[in-house]
Image (cartoon, rainbow, N blue to C red; front, top):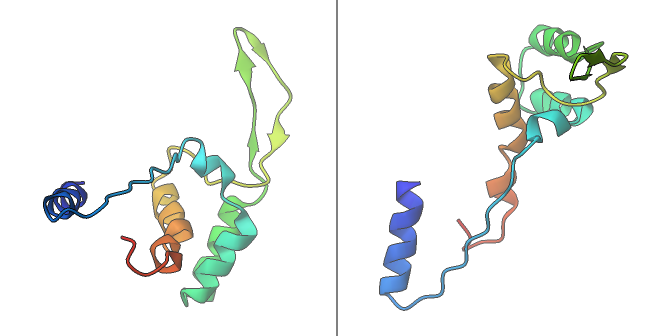
Length: 108
């Protein structure tokens, strides 16, 4: 964050235009498609046994909703990484890692 503010300040001091785009990652962990994530793990040349373990870790997960005292039937989670798990931020980081590389040149 400090690096970004420094870049913005320097650009403004030089009279350049500064445009900032914020990305809202709310609920982002819930929306990670398993097939795309696993493909990125393959592209990263992870050990096939590790990928198999992660595939198993993400498979057959369910979630349920409770409102007040009423619980609803569990549903199958077709995408997303488990919230609260130590591995989830790492998997999400791998999933979004290519964003800077697909931006046009000159954009940081």
